[in-house]
Image (cartoon, rainbow, N blue to C red; front, side):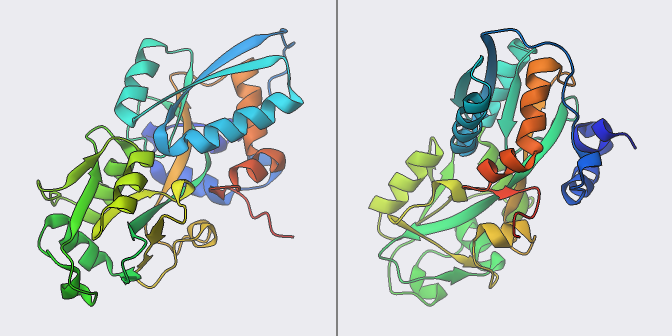
Length: 280
């Protein structure tokens, strides 16, 4: 298998290929940089899903510090919106934690953890996957049924088209439907805001959006931490991809190559789980 096939692949080969790639961290398994000359003032566009906005901003800012001739335009939106924008602009790339489309070339940059969050004043600290599923099905109406104090449960989910919602439903719900009584959060930031101000609320969000206004729950006895995402023990995790219609060339290729190097992976590790072990 060639270098490019291991770290950048058409998804038609299956997610298993990418999962293998996550464990191949030697220099020979990284996307090779382009060898052409670099034009001054080159503009690159990235469509970035909302859970990936912190990563998109950190990666592009760090890359510009070492390559000041490159100018990035990052355009945020949910998965469906970003996918539609990419379809109308097929020379650009998108950054996402959800990618079911087998027509796209894609390379992994790390892993994202999906944290289940409750109001900071709610004494519940842990749920099983079964209990979480029952809550989101609407079959558990009060926190007292799960060992908490009496308080009505307010289920909050993301809007249709959200990649985080798609990953949550894949990992937690399977073929089961989320209760139609659930409130809808239009973005990751809005999800945190709703849960923070609503007693009894429960939601889910990329770990990169966690702050002190909400509490992240232990799931099946595993803490929601970047370490546990990286070692594949935390159950709610997804692969972070950069994807496009074509294998990247020159400027995009150099950026993706850099994001898979130690320097780029240290940027990923600020809020996400990197591809490689950064411990000495």
